[in-house]
Length: 109
Image (cartoon, rainbow, N blue to C red; front, side, top):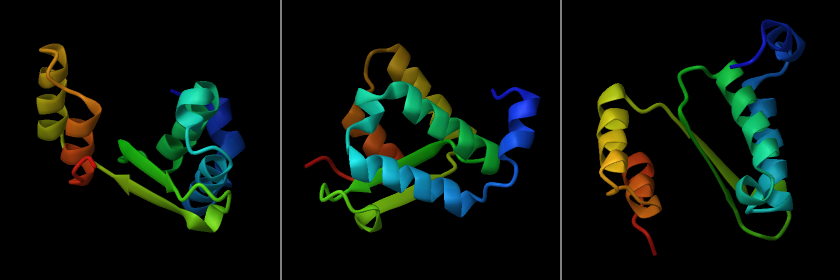
């Protein structure tokens, strides 16, 4: 959770601007969430600050370095879905492909 003073500092940023920051970050490096976890965490804080109901974000980059070619998607999953995924995780039955399907309804390639 952000410190209240930080909320004031970033309150002028719009949700569209924050999405653009994410597009730029993932255009620069499609693996930014793995290679720079702290930067990805800061982006997640900003998303949560501006869109508090959002609990899933996806930035799919074409890999050509152009932020215009990065698709950004945001989703709010209900507590039932989150609880079911948590239970699967606790049993060791949750993997990235299952999460991708449950959240985005995409099948792994």
